[in-house]
Amino acid sequence: MIPIRTSISPRHTPYANYLLIAANVFIFLLTFWPHEVFIYGQRLVEPLRPAAQQFMLTPDRPYIWQFVTYAFLHGGWMHIIGNMYFLFMFGNNVNDRLGNVGYLCFYFAGAVFSGIGHSLLHTSPVLGASGAVAAVTGAYLVLFPNTLITVFFMFFYFWDTFEIRALYFIAFKLIVWDNIFEPKFSSQAIAYDAHLAGYFFGILAILALLGVRLIDSGGVDMWSMIRQWNRRRVFKDAVSDGYDPFSPRLRKPVNAQVKPANEAEESPEIDYYREQISSSIAYKNIAQAAELYEELLEVDPKQTLGRQQQLDVANQLMSAGRWNPAAQAYENFITNYPGYEYIEQVQLMLGLLYTRYIRKADRAKELLQTAQQKLSQPDQIRMCKDLLTELVR
Image 1 (cartoon, one colour):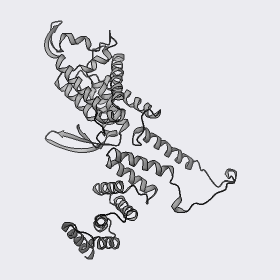
Image 2 (tube, rainbow, N blue to C red):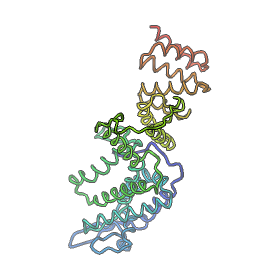
Image 3 (tube, rainbow, N blue to C red):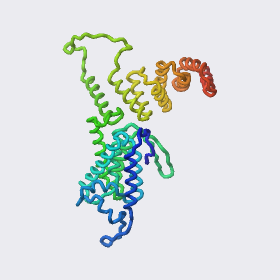
Image 4 (cartoon, rainbow, N blue to C red):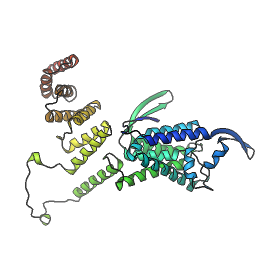
């Protein structure tokens, strides 16, 4: 199972990540020189040039600089390719959130802490960027848990791709399966504990930075998810405790003024959802924005976003087969943006939903007849007529 792309892309060029990849490759080409050595009568293959071996991390007699230099050494072509592939896959967006300087500091700290994790449990030398890459991947898990990762998988001669949330893929596949269960079936000399230490550092460090607001929360990260979960837990606890707002001992005299409905303030929960949706769209994650908007409709079915945002979310829900929330999204768009220059196309799409999927014939006929008067493209006119014909049958 190999991740081949994510549903978001960095808004700025991730120069620091490119620099780290280039440095790793350059140092690998300088230090990689597989040659045979004889130790206690056994013939072994040593992957590094003799001068480079001192830069590996040797836990039984470590030098302080080895906790950084070991992360730039690799024992083979698959080792360097695998590490750099995952660093490119997840590091670009983390670089974008942390900035170039912050990302470099985080990467080196991840290498140090993963080296410490290995040294505490093992005495064998270690090399490779896997621990630092694990820290970066853990950071991605915290910063973008709901982004979609397209995964390629092969089982014998059968292969396919599927999409899965980063939260599940990284947590269960990369962390739990690859580093906890797989070692029980593998005899390869892989520093699994260095990986786990890297993931542990990456996740906790980014959560801490978000918690103290050294990193701005975009409303779509794991810290925001934890806060949202806690808020819902408090609400549920308050209801389950039998709180009675009409109890005489809880009443206080107040001067209350009733606002007209159109001036009513939105609830904090609605504000929170709208912020999350805007952040998701800013990071080009329309799929997540659509899921959040569907949850928002459960709170208030009349909630409407900005014009283009509303249309993008409605189209995403439609393409995902979420017929009812898609219809509500289109209805809210038509209600709030009746002057949209292509409103007839929105009416056609909603008419299609009501004709074939939700079965609201009267509303579908109304929408399609209105759209037919303005449609200009032949294929859309033909579709509109076909849908009206279906309604008559």
